[in-house]
Length: 214
Image (spheres, rainbow, N blue to C red):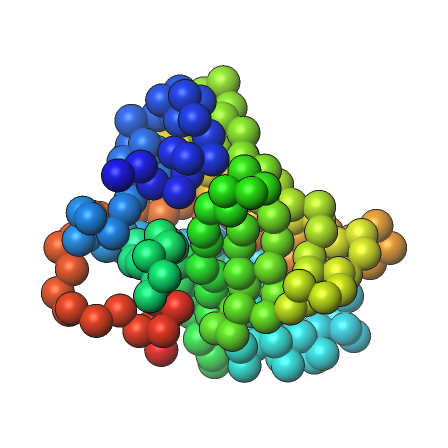
């Protein structure tokens, strides 16, 4: 079975660094999870006066208003199949601030009609983005979206997001950089850091709804 990222990238997938291939080659047949632990060097973005409004999205593990430096971080990836047999990969992110723990969760699938990865955001999956994937010369992966949609009925104009990840051989870890921006509001969120990753056997039989763990 090919992973959703293999399907999206085709032969370009094999230009990824071997450790990137291992991580993004995750399928439900392997019965493993990816556990990442590290620190985000910095989390910034959004004018301070607007940040309180982001707490509404924090309830859905979609956006949050906290900002800081050297923030502990975990990432869990699970591959599972829906009742319809569709392959999905969950991204369960946790940011550990001094007085709160915030989530930024997503479920990714491959849309065979669009030939793109679709990223459904938050526990509810109410927001989604179509993602373009590009392999960089050093074997990293660049993911870009130029439109955020709400329940497939409308979109938030101008909001763009990008994710760049590559494997740092000296550190033996993945370096990640995420940037969400708006042409008028500027940087809404940016975070970057180093994540050490383990590949562990699954220890439970039933994946929670959408693969998102509470």
